[in-house]
Image (cartoon, rainbow, N blue to C red):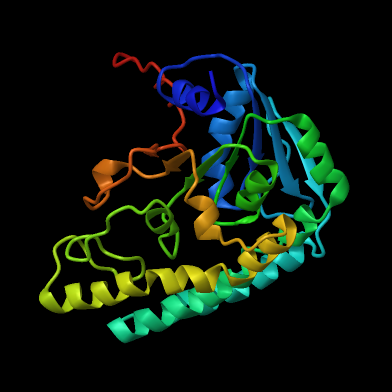
Length: 286
């Protein structure tokens, strides 16, 4: 059984056939949503190797896995300070009009262009670590494409890639997967529209849809350059992600606006949910 079928079986049916899985997560809530699945895969006997930077907001050793870390040119305090300042600028921006929301969208893309590749060169050009990863002979990689470093590693190691994400800012999942996104009822990110739009809203949504390839090209500018340098050929994130084996979409279809998805896109909402503890027994006669 391939690791791709293994992951689906573990998530849906509870199969316990072992495999070797490389995990390169993104920080913050992205990792918290992935961590329960990663630990469960390790608990069921799979060899799971998680690669993380030695300074992060929330990542660290996890149960039933092997953790490998690599040095990065910043401290946790510096990361928190820089991120807080940038997020404050984004969250304090006026979004009361379509033009203001579009300006916020452009600013967000510019911020993410640098933020999401802050670890890329530290990992990808760490020759000892990359050699070690190649020697593991992994069956597949599980990564979050929010930070493209895992996408590049999977392509470099020539192993099947499973992407786990919420909604990407530029909608790269639909672009890379060639998934239909009818502008008449599929709202684009940052528009704050619903699936019931007026004629004006549909027109604005159409503009966002047409700009989607340019938005992804902008956000992945540095990542494309780093990937081309490592792989020694002209590469792009959209092209690499188009070869994804699976997309695990971290949302509940019942809470989303209706939209088409491709056959290799699987919705896995509620990954942060925990099994509730039983309620204490209370006597009515005490």
